[in-house]
Length: 487
Image 1 (cartoon, rainbow, N blue to C red):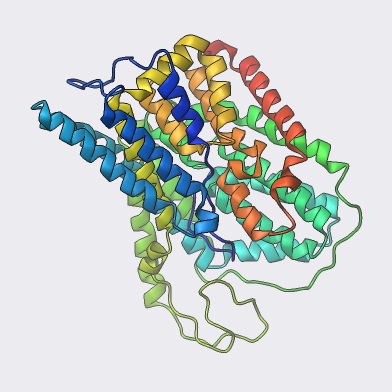
Image 2 (cartoon, rainbow, N blue to C red):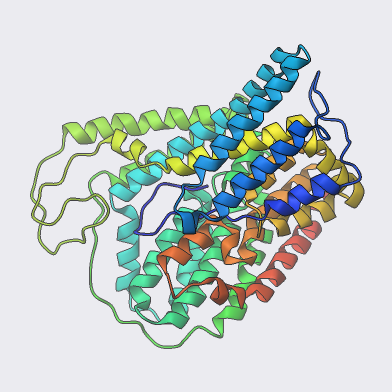
């Protein structure tokens, strides 16, 4: 789940590797499996199917190269989605079945719309907390504490683990990385080690909550796992974080970092917005559990809480000049000596991560199109029927270190393999924490490579991949042991 908070870090780059999946689909002996959906045509061996695969692979290649081309990741996948569905519609029209494509596209679009509205509300809240300087107050408070490097290593990692289930893993990682950079200064060893632990902790924490990552949100909204069932993953996720952290602890430098004494105060209303966010989450849970309605309805209702409170803040705002030296200038706060502007809910909406939301639109429609062509049923037959659910879910999680976990999870949900609750929890865990194996394996890792450029790198993370993999394996074994009764 990627929020729109801006802590002076470049936008995260989605990782690639979809060519491997394409190869499996093209050369699998089960590639002629029947496509899903009423009245669907099997286009897996038709030129339309092959062109669709090439379009998606090419678009994902451009996504991988975003860091070098500076072409926003949403653009190629949106174009690919339009072309793929246009080709499908053209082929169905030739077979006098135009209405079938329309219904299939509307079904896919409805799935995206529910997730889009949910994420939009969540991002707006996170941006409102950022504008009220809640995250910066936390950062400077930790920076002012006279803690050793090793204690800060654990404090930031533990906060990342428990904060990511609420505000998502990437935002959590950015906030904690800002703390590490503030207190670590030029201690590269401390920064690289702690950033690695933060990425692992944030991804692990996001795995046991529907709000911690887009993949967990997708599973919850699809109804595969109930809200309270996610907490069965708490101990496996904790093991995933603690195992590598304990190995890293011995290599964290000793000593006490210097403190610059800076202080950031939370702006008026920041604490209230935190409680409104909690109330919004409870509303979403209640709407899903008690009314059996999409959680996005609860989130959008909660957005109205913020809108009304924002109206109150705006009407009661007192224009006062900023006190020089009383706080840092952060984000869109006006410089010292200028008047602070009143809270504006629509400016918070505007600062949502629109590129991520549109990227998500393109991915959902592309994968949905490939599924309607018939490739996902082929892949499901190859993976889940041929290898078994446990092996397949472990492999899916490992692939998420290379292939973006959003299309991977959407593909699994589109395949809809017949699995018990324990297996759905397993694939939720593995896709959530599998990205920690590499720094490019998650949005949190990619974002931190940009924020701590030159200090947290691909290779500084890679040297800890063996112990992270040990935590990955341990978390799976713990899940299989603790939740054996639902596997």
